[in-house]
Image 1 (cartoon, one colour):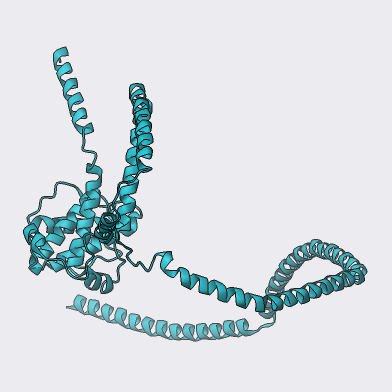
Image 2 (tube, rainbow, N blue to C red):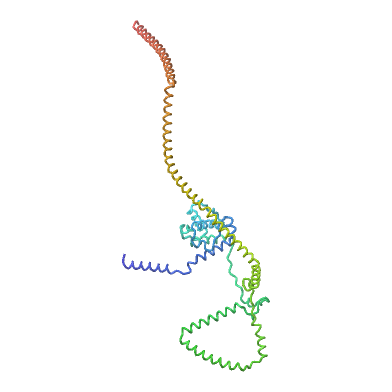
Length: 420
């Protein structure tokens, strides 16, 4: 391979790595949006009643399948929810059991997804974790199919007509435009303060602007001095001033919205509670002081009594401790000696078992020596043999007789043949 080809391949690798690195910063949050969409689809399918209650499953959070927490629990929830969605889409799919093969169950779910016409370009290992992009994709597609079967369709958003809103007349209950809101006043004041602060910061950073500001301030001081001189001689008409005040007075009206959570609405009630607490405290304070004195005296008596009892029981307690130590020593000697007794008891048990075996053998030998049953059996056997021998002798005699007769007949036949 040439050097140019190697350079081209390396350049291609660098380009591919750059492409992989240049990813959108919001791509990591897409999985959370998809999980939220899945949860909304499940709510449209009424999964609280049909799935959680009937199948006795735990409710899902907004980020349940987006973040890996408990792999076993998430995998069980995934396959169970997928089976329920497949059933909701009108197809037969058994509820997964505890001892089912995970690979078989996942393959069945993905095959069902392919039958519905959706693309599956990942393996079974991607969904074994029970969380991630592939799991949410699978459940979203199954939920879409279930919504189609249920006849649900997404409608376009409806926007209100701005012209109609402008033409609507204000209600009588609504506050007048001339009335001011304290919240708006506070916001404006904060905004003006922040603008002034920004202006001051900019003036501090800009030395030239600071010099200009000093000249402006000096000019303003001169103007204020002139105004003070003019104020000493007022040319204002009192009637015009009253008319102006009457005209502006409705605009200066301030309305405060009643908020039950605001502490100002409950200030009077708080004062009443405080007064009632103070009054009840005066009555109960004496009782508490008396009770405190009685408890203190009782504790002092208990302490003195405890000291007296401890002094009286000091010697018996010391004797009791000595007896306990002596008892512990005796128990220790008993344990050490009991171990020797146990060993000797085991040896005795072995000797007694051996002695019992020897006794049984001796008894069997004595019984065999004193018992005459074998002799009787031998005598009976000899008698039966003798009777058998007699029978055999008789049979032998009969056979000899028959044999002699046969020989004589044979001789007679030979002699007859010779004479002829």
